[in-house]
Image (cartoon, rainbow, N blue to C red; front, side, top):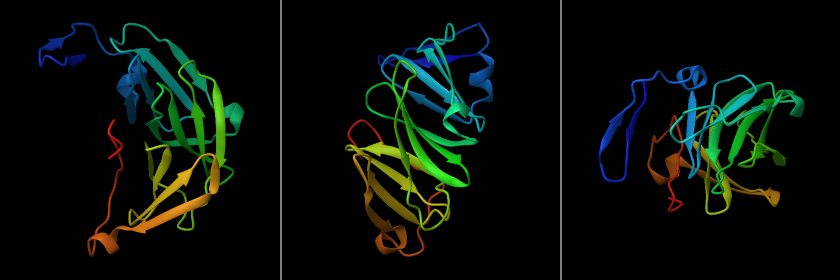
Length: 168
């Protein structure tokens, strides 16, 4: 079943079961108008925030996507999709209406990234080892800034990456 917490801290429980794609989802992203969901398949689902009915189903196989690794909000109610295509990593922007936009092959020296987020107009990628963060400008994808987590804190590693509306 669904459980919602409003800004007023009032918790509302729904008696209806959650839709199957939300139950199976390995990644969820909430925007202002919709909730995006995915698992490893090359499919995205978008629901209104109350999850009352499917709003969009976006098939990514037509873009050569073999597997979705992660999704992140794009700041405009769409999502960035971190995916695998032909053994390489790519980031694909899907707008709030489900249309594909910018597609970037990602330069990742440590293999396919394990996660991404969107912060201050940049994609931030967490590498496969969980020890390297890479900032990529989608308008100039060759321009990358890397930070090794152990340079910030010795022995540091991460398993997931996320940001918030203040781009932290």
